[in-house]
Length: 220
Image (tube, rainbow, N blue to C red):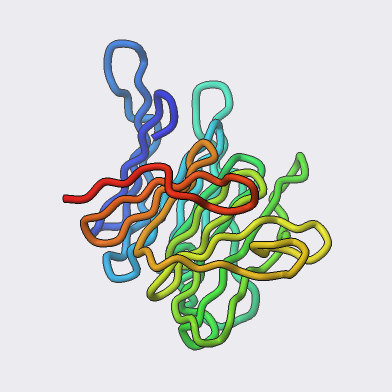
């Protein structure tokens, strides 16, 4: 959901539907025959922010980018993984903040996974960096989100938070090149806050003085 736009995916049939509220009712702006959620991996395969729509088509190792101009969505670019290997699940999780796109590929490198970040130079999306963590963290890229110079990348058993360090890439701390991982099963970044869930518990964390602190939490 972004403003008056809602994007809906499916669990069983490859399809994505984009609806826009015109002031009185919801109109179907766009329907595609690709984009499907994998309940095992659990990532978000669609995201919309402003006039940028990203749809992960991980069954074909593609991620499609649309831009809203005038009164319609137009496919702007198709992002693809590096190398010739197939079944990388490139697009199993996607996110955008309009200026960057992050794409998870949790099946690449024998299931250790990677996340790929792309930036827009004013005319096209180009590769910025690849996020990789230690070799014992499987399925890296099954959950992703990005907001400005902050990103989160999920792997089996936790969520890692990173910041963009211009000299070295994505790390928790630009001085020590560390990465911090939380034992959450899912997470998202919104308006400077991190929402992390584990089972019936939802934690809301705020970034204060260089670290995440508990802002609020809810539990069933």
